[in-house]
Amino acid sequence: MAGVGFRRWAQALSKGKGSGISALLSGCRAASGLSKDSLPGPYPKTPEERAAAAKKYNMRVEDYEPYPDNGEGFGDYPKLPDRSQQERDPWYQWDHPDLRRNWGEPMHWDFDMYIRNRVDTSPSPVSWSTMCKQLFGFIGFMLFMFYVGEKFPAYQPVVSTHLNARILFSLFFCWCFFLTVTIFSSFKMAGSSFF
Amino acid sequence: MADYREAPLATRPKTLDPNEYFNLSPEQRRAEEARGALRANLKRQYQLQLNNPHRKELIEDPALTRWVYARGNPYAHFRPTNKTSLLGAMFGVVPLFKHCSLLTRCLKEEQIKAGTLERKFSLSS
Image (cartoon, rainbow over all chains, first blue to last red; front, side, top):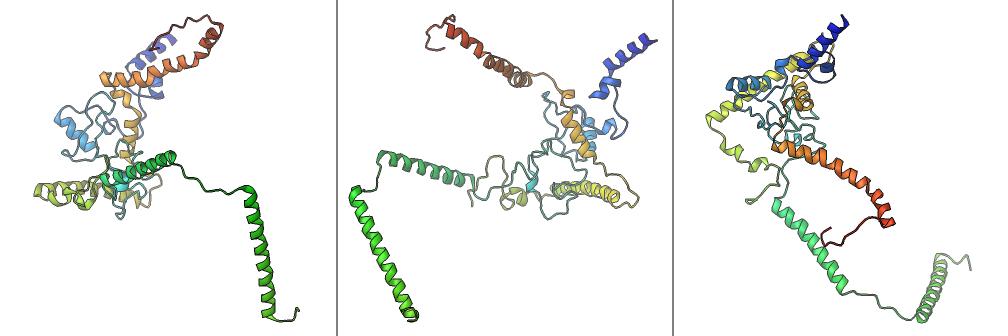
C-alpha cells in the first residue's frame, strides 16, 4: 500500500509541470487566482496564438510584440516601449497616481526599474551636445589650471620674523590708542556726567 | 533648438516629437481610438469594482499577477543558447573559480616564504 502510494507520488512529480513548492509536493498549481490561460505562457508561434496573447494582455493585436525568442525566459510577455513612469501625464486621473498607471494596464518587464523614484527616461532640458561640452569643458579647464599651477607655483611674500613681530606690536599699540580715544570722545559727546 | 539631440536612452520633448505632427492619418486615428476603447473598458471594470458598496475584499489586478508570474518563472521558457550559456558561465562559474584562487593565496604565501616554490623569471607572468 505504502509502496503503491510512493510510486504514484514519484510519477506525479516527474510529470508535474508546476513550479515552486507546490510542484514538489503535488505537481499542480493552486486553484485560486488566475486560470492557466490568463497567465503568461510560451512564445506565440502562430497568428492565432499571437491574437490570443494580445487579448490576454489587453492589447491590440497590432500593438502586441513579444520579446524575441532566444531562450532568455521572456515567453510571450509583451515588449513595451522603454519609457519611465515619470514621462506620463501628471495631470491625468490615473487609478494609481503615484505609479501613474491604470488598473489592468500591461506592465513593462522592468516596471520596478521605471518607477518615479528610479530610472527616468524623460527628455533632458538641454541637448546632449551642450551637456557634454559644458561638463567636459569645465573639468578640462580645471584640470588644465591645476596643472599650470603645479608647474608655476606662486607664493605670498614674507618679511623677516623679527621685523614682522615689531610691525604687529606697533599696530596693536595704535589700535589700543584709538580705541581709548573713541571711548573717551563718545563719553564726552553723550554727556559730561562721567568726568 | 533646431539641433536638439536627446540624451541616449531618453526621449525627445513632446513639442519636438515628430509623432505629434505627422501621425494624423485615418488609420492612426482609428488605432488611437481602439486603444482608447480598451483603456475605457479597463477603467469601467475597475470603477465598478471600486465603487461596489458590497465589496469587502481587495481588487485583484490580473496584469500585476501576470507580471509577477512572468518575472518569477523565467526558467520555464529558458533554453541554453550561445548567449545564455556565455552569460551563465561568466556570472555563475567564473566567479567561483576566481574566489577560490583569491582565497587560497595565503597557502601559496607560506611556500614562498619557505623558499620551496619555484619562481621562474618571465616577462609575462
